[in-house]
Amino acid sequence: MRVALAEDGALFRQGLVMLLEAAGHEVVACEPGGDELLRALADQPVDVAVLDIRMPPEPDGGLVTAERLRASHPDTGLLFLSHYAESHYLVRILEIGTEAIGYRLKEKVGSVDVLSDTLTRIADGEIVIEPVLARRLVEKPRNDRANVVASLSERERDVLKLMAEGRANGAIAGELYVSGKAVEKHIASIFDKLGLHADATESNRRVLAVLTYLRSQRGEG
Image 1 (cartoon, rainbow, N blue to C red):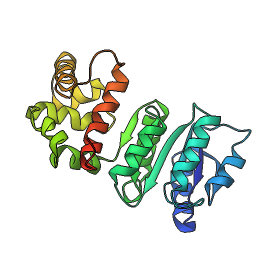
Image 2: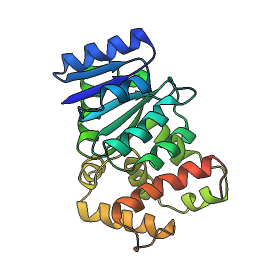
Image 3: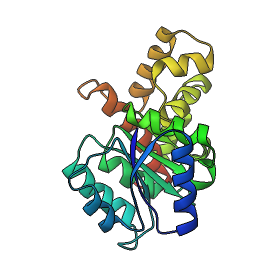
Image 4: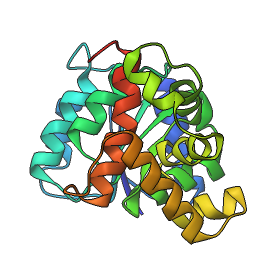
């Protein structure tokens, strides 16, 4: 696929280019900051843009760049990279978009297979969240909002964890060795317990379920 890259660390930037090219992708633009990337992509859309969260324009240039890129090229997938799995970053990322978007740790995308799988899932419209962050959200509730999470059954928590990683129903069923109908039933129960009613779309309720956990970690009501 056609990929653009913005990363202010020269060594990591060149390493990503090598990984992308080794996987057979075309690196259309490779820039040290968000402003440069936006100029480079003004007239040539790409399938996915890979953005360092903390880069020029400071302090969170990747997020600012993504907002502008989604406005000008709404079909472009976005992959955010960071050294840290931070829930406040993920909240902002999901506010930018709920489709074709991902947040991974830099240390976890250091192989051709992992990077290509992540890019493919984003290009296919999925939400890809760093698993360590999804596990932290599910396993360590801290406030009243998270008490609702505690009401979920163990299987529902397993399903929600995989939802938070951006897995589709079929992938969840395969991971848990259950039927697709069983996954649908668990998800419906999760939505009901979290108060996510049927007047919203399925995809929006999935994202809202993840945001419920994220906001509980931040102490929001």
